[in-house]
Image (cartoon, rainbow, N blue to C red):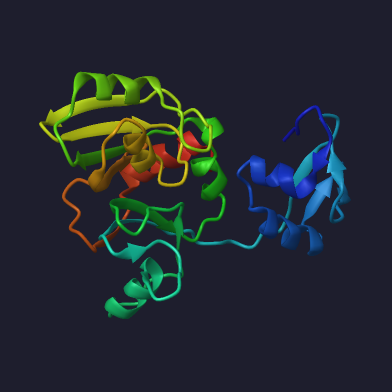
Length: 240
């Protein structure tokens, strides 16, 4: 394994390589399981492209990956006076499920696909906009769609905070419904984009994340990601 040309902290290096989260890396380092040039690494140590990094005696960890069809009215993370995904699943599932966390957010008023896992390596690899991973949504708005509106969304719009959204792929499905594919995930981005062009979102459903599609997964259902989908998903993220 060879780090980047610029010196970076060893925990960041292991995280960027998809070998451990930064917290997991710190645990491995503290346990003496990370070697730099044959010597035990210390917390905060930096590495360069002239260094050789190794992980030894790493405890085996079983990772779990699920897809969940989030209903409207449920938050992805705990908030005051709301129901969140993990608490709802914990109460509703009679069988034991592994301790999971949702990757990313899907606002309370939206529904659809979200990934749950216990693998912290997925988070940055999936959510960091520099990787341009596709997310697809089905959107219903409050009035009839116009070609001008679709063209603006496809080109990118200037949000209220001054940021310009990336070009998106949009397709009209009906008088008031369209699908949109984006490669970033700003807070309530699609709702804000529609407001800029004079439309209000009535319903918003995420139907795809990269190669993972919602398909026939029922609302409120949790399902393990099938191996034929999981292998290319992790490979695209650079996780082994």
